Length: 260
Ligand SMILES: [Mg+2]
Image (cartoon, rainbow, N blue to C red; front, side):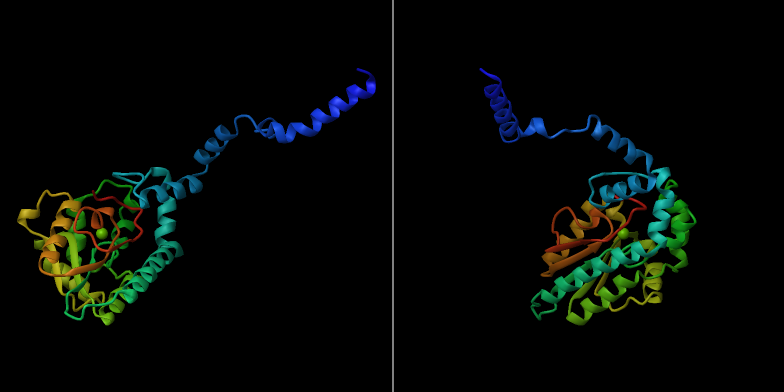
């Protein structure tokens, strides 16, 4: 092969390499993935936003307190615009679904609401208790409940009223106990919620049950009574999962605590 022939062979090889062997042409920077994960771990804001995604989607599963590095992030999220914005978007989708439901007109079209962090906000309590970074203290929390001063989550109050206007029967299904009924009713009325069909609290036979089981059983009782549960709103997956679930479940944000 002469010099011209050799040149031709080199040219042909150079031209065909990109199509014949595409992988060999794309140069991947060594250790790119490792350096990315290090960056993720070093930036609290970035990490905590990803952590929040995982707890809201239930990818994180059961957890007992927020990571200490995320206290500032959760504080900012809850106290700033984002919590209100997220709650507002969820409420809008919920109402849009409610508006699309064809009601039976027999008074059996139901919507189930959880109470804490769904209708009422315990943010004043959690502001004083590390935004979920402290171990939950039932005694202190019960004292807060007794005050009956939890404000309404504005977007949820709008949704609540909107669903009532549409003709839904509202059922309030809470993990609070029967001994807290009076304080709960007082707080709901004080915050603008009224005319609910029924307020369901944990009775003696519900003690010790997982929230998912307790709430599923109560929903099943409603279905057995002829109610059609179109929608369900809750800040915990245990408000929404299990059996006798609503046609549509709406998960509200809550990066402060997890109830199994
Ligand atoms: Mg709740």
